Length: 165
Ligand code: HEM
Image (cartoon, rainbow, N blue to C red):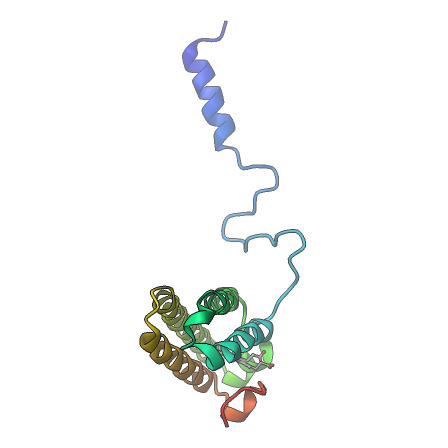
């Protein structure tokens, strides 16, 4: 007959087993069904479109909810982009392994700084602090330019029609 201790041990052992389709430790999370493959370029385009919309109406109080949705879209692009590998050509252009590691680190760090700014921007819009929102959107643009410069991209290499000349 099973003792209580045997039953508890059996339950714990079962719980400790990984689910049959669980990812291996350290492996990238599996993509959700229906989620399409996206590149750094694709996530940049998501941010670019949303930022263009914000630029025209950031101080319009009647667009608060719309602006919050645009900032959310930028955050989404930023978080997804941050976890993606840099394009091969960009890495190769950087040079040897050490130079590539440095570029990857700079990319992550700039994307993280951007994400923090986007969170502050969301708070400013949500609290209707529109002067702050305007300033923060400006800072987001500056971080974009700093990030692109760190990637060795000149002003012309960002092909957005909205990119400041
Ligand atoms: C509001 C912020 C940003 C916007 C709106 C933005 C926008 C863009 C645009 C329009 C492009 C060109 C995409 C294309 O080829 O069509 C681009 C490329 C790129 N951006 Fe950003 N960017 C932002 C921030 C950043 C930051 C912080 C970094 C970090 C270093 C970064 C790294 C890159 C890289 C690596 C590419 C080249 C992608 C490729 O060639 O595949 N961007 N970005």
